[in-house]
Amino acid sequence: MAYCLVFVNTNNGHPLLVRSTNILERNEHTPEIILNLLERPSDNQIPLALIGILTSSYTFSTKFGITLRSCRTDDCTIHFHQYNDHLLMCLLEPTEYDVPNECTQYKLVLLRTLFNMIIGYEYIDKISQTNPQKLENDLNLVKYFVDTILNDERTFSFGDLTQCADTLCGFDRSIMYSCLKQISDNLQCEHVSITL
Image (cartoon, rainbow, N blue to C red; front, side):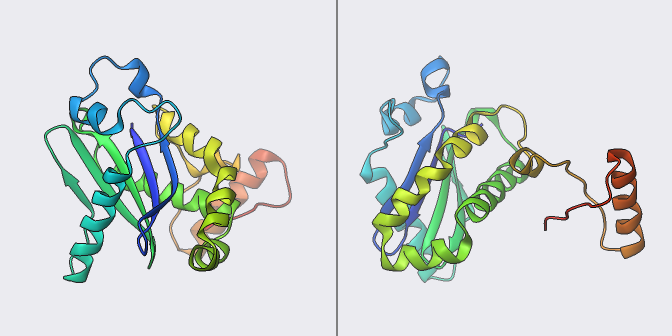
């Protein structure tokens, strides 16, 4: 379970979207450092200094050819996911829960997919360079879904976003067609949509 998501423009350090989970308000065992940094946000706001530290750490390492995936303190793990050349997602979570890195990376990919599905990658890429203020307003469309993903204690899936059944199958066409035929037969429908 993540405490906070920061979607930030690395060119100017401007936070485009900041969302935190309500677990901060209900968990008595929350790591102290997180509470100090976030100061128990009531409206999903965190100090700009923290956003600056996250952005500058990632940008600094990138200039030396190092791609930061995550960093850890005794109380907090911060995961980085580069959306594109100038947009960065940072996910803060308490170290005490010891969430597997694969689960967190999956959550970041899911959040990225959410942005792409609702707003569109090309639009986000273009407008973030020309009019970040407009993009910040446009990201209001995803706030509910981001909050749902961050607050959900189980592993959220693409099927939850699309309201479709999740099916994983290999790239062998015969296996894929067989799998799709079974889905089609079970649902008693003639068409099946594939989302990649």
